Length: 464
Ligand SMILES: Cc1cc2nc3c(=O)[nH]c(=O)nc-3n(C[C@H](O)[C@H](O)[C@H](O)COP(=O)(O)OP(=O)(O)OC[C@H]3O[C@@H](n4cnc5c(N)ncnc54)[C@H](O)[C@@H]3O)c2cc1C
Image (cartoon, rainbow, N blue to C red; front, side):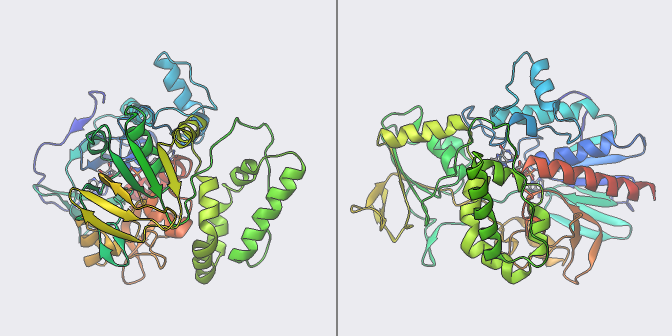
């Protein structure tokens, strides 16, 4: 990043937090976009924004930290601007770097990290500090909070939690822990471990979502001797994007009480109506993106639960789509017989020397796997998280899980609820942790809006 950004290298003395001090925990996309909005939204020279990032490198996080250039954004470039009100910002950045990006295309995700870094550097000044290190505890003190890493303590009047996605929960079958399996790879985003597998490896990929797709590409693209079996209960892959249609489809969401089954029928009816007009189902799904948060909030808890239990898979594979190039690669591996996709889950697992033997109800023969990659998706239940910060925050009653264990309890505006059911003054959240409240809370178009709103609320506190 540009040299304007100071890197904290000292132990900060304990002091009563100045109201201008803002700490952001997590320097992935959510943290960077929040810092960007704070710095660009205020000229107050007393403002002091510290981004605490465990890796010390901003902008990457899990999604954009990939080192495989074939891992593409799953959202079109024209929708990935850091600023909702400047849709061309990412494209302009790419043009300044001498490229000719297709606004409808899908850029490599690693480039997006560079974009976030450059965009933050462009607004960064003495008011921004990057603190390399994992925040392990946040302790309420008069006037704010103390943030504790392994070797330092700092203070802030306001803390924004932007800790993002958790690693997947450990694999288990029928309650039996599979993490000791030979060749078990618990972290699907550890591409070095995937690349290091033998050139003739047979690999079981558990999960069939977008991370499983990434894993298949890194595993299979450069090593024609490798094979993979991708398995989940439903065995459904994300659908692929197609060339952008010029026709939009706006669905009038019904008034009055909503039910999960009623919503599913509504979406099916809209898809049928669109098809009758020659419009692809993707336009219906995309048209429902904007009202999704309000639809979710109109459902009561039982209906949200029913949606998750019965309908969410059908929605998710259509909502979170692969870039067309990515879909073509996956189709190619399947055609060549190097990738087998199955549903029905894993019935049993045995150890056979250095390999794991997986019995899959969908296949006549068991799979003898040199490696088993856990691609079951980010763990959202904070009560099961091994993350020291999440454990500490819950222990202090500063954070509680939402009832569906999708994230943490917060208001729609991002104020965090404590164990006493009250908003914790000065503690806010941006990004995936707000999924329980908003459902749509994990992609850039939503995160950049949240970052702007949270920044406005935080700046109002610093000047109060
Ligand atoms: C594989 C993948 C691909 C995706 N692709 C897209 C896409 O193409 N388009 C899109 O819009 N969305 C995509 N998403 C959605 C993604 O969730 C968001 O776009 C966004 O990257 C989330 O950023 P984040 O900062 O909230 O979380 P993360 O990316 O998880 O980053 C969190 C950061 O916080 C740091 N951190 C965590 N805890 C602490 C702590 N206690 N102390 C200090 N630092 C801490 C971590 O080191 C990490 O850098 C993708 C998600 C995944 C998982």
